[in-house]
Amino acid sequence: MKEFMVPTVIVRLAATSLLLFATAGERLPYAYFQILRWIVCGAAIFCAATAYDQKHKWWPWPFVLIALLFNPIVSFHLKRGSWQVLDIAAGVVLLISLFFVREKKVGTSG
Image 1 (cartoon, rainbow, N blue to C red):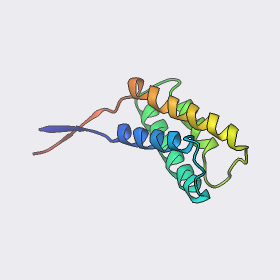
Image 2: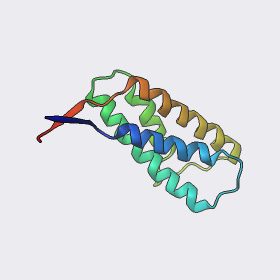
Image 3: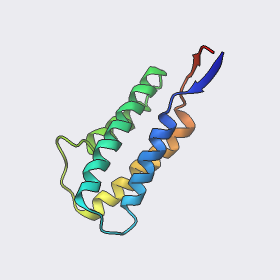
Image 4: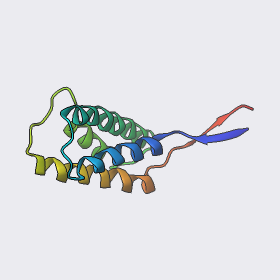
């Protein structure tokens, strides 16, 4: 029986990369930030569900906060500097969570 890890690690690394790229100082098109909101919000919801499923007591909450801040439906309008701080903070939370919120191994037949 082969085992593999559920891909929240990949999701968190991708979201973190996009968040940190947004703070690089370059003027990016507005569409980048719209896509960023969808990806980060989705990643945060996925990670919150994973943390909750694994019975973590407080790890779901930072993910829920990130999902609320980056939700693409009802967006917050903040200055660029404020968003850069939030982008870095969310990226750091997602990176730190890699060490504490780990996926359960899922078995496959074969």
